[in-house]
Image (cartoon, rainbow, N blue to C red):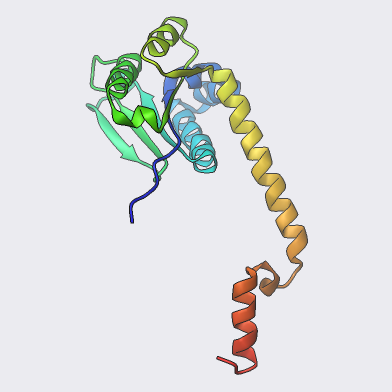
Length: 182
């Protein structure tokens, strides 16, 4: 059985986000770029899973000693480091250009998160949707709060016993096991 196509491909200009999100900028200045990248990856891992997005965070190679690489973090999120001399903007633009001629465009949205004004015009010209870095931050925060509210309401309903946390089918099967009906 094949995995369902995510309803959106989200391309994120990583260092643009790190430079604009206040908490990541603070982290970068205090603990270094690696820690800010790690925190961004963690935030977008949860967001992407919740939204069902195929997210690709793109970082320029200028801040790394290695060549291009790709790290698969989860089924929903991967991190790309560009070739030396290639910018994240160029990488994202090439991806948008390729997507423009891809049949996926009929079934999947392409969203680019950046606050670079020139880059915004270019990707929209390729048919991608644009999302500001500030809007992405607001959506990530809202999603995190939504998940926490759901988690709290689930915890209140289940009570203290482990059996209460199980789905009804599992509870029924355990009950049948307990009374020797299986």
